[in-house]
Image (cartoon, rainbow, N blue to C red):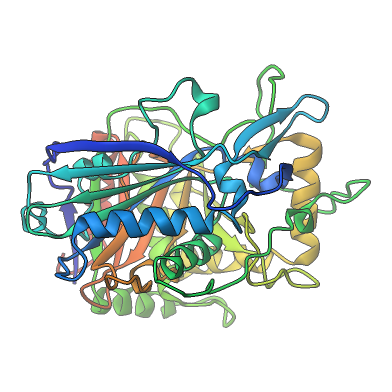
Length: 449
């Protein structure tokens, strides 16, 4: 029904780098400065993903690398900001992107292994970090590093992986999906863009003057001296355990039935995401050190990511290119999360996104304009369940698996569909002691786990 699988131990994929270059747009692009919204401002960190492909006799890895490089050169014309660099506007204290055609990173590599040697792709391996370069070692200081890097790694079997490391300020999940579809389209001989992206990030600019109409406990102003530029939403780096919590369809149905028991609200949305997020929140909140005498009174806050494109009035274009996401929150005492019926926890998770209306979203953006704050919560659950990275059609076919690469983030859980069945996987990264307690609470929740 539900299972817990550790990340495979293989950390060295014996990767050799053959080429590490900057790719420039295929045509001259206008020199300009791109405005970044208040949501974009705080997301200045890389999100690496990996996309695996089995061997295609018509497309050996050398051909794939050439085609992908050509596609990148073409797509950097409509996506000119991806070849740019961050610049701090000294007057406003805001980050901007200088669209200067400095280039995107491109790496060609090979591994001494076959794809079969890596095991099940669904369960990301620490070694997969070698398949998605985040910096180009042959470049200089941070200012010279590209905002995105693409890596093609061939394997002995003829299969290959495409790693993509993109700064989160460039895209949210939806706009990254659109970009990848456009990149794949340009890899064909004469295919137009799948979607024309909307680059007007002023659509999410703060109002003048700002008007904060709601309290926003899901954000906090950093308690630190003023610094140049916006704060970054990140966490400290420490040694973590990584595990996949795999839930089959029957496990999800079991959670949904539990959510109906003693349900205190007929309006509770009992979805796969809501029941899984509720379970993850409960396990995370209770996984703190049992010797903490303040645990019963400690308040735990869950953040879940909400796409605001359709919630605004007027709605954003579906092709909006940038970060059109906010966090919805649910807060409760740990003792309540332990004692409440599961239906109450699901209800709280379900209620969070209902607060994110047009006026609420604008209030958040205005709050960020004034306070330059960061998301404030114990744990964030972000869903990739509706993203279709593994359905993108390249000339060499669809990926057999696409997903996130494990990172240092212990404050974020990534949830994504299992590509082998209709189940759902949750990638959890925690310090060893916390992980031990987390998985104990997870197992106890299922009768046959």
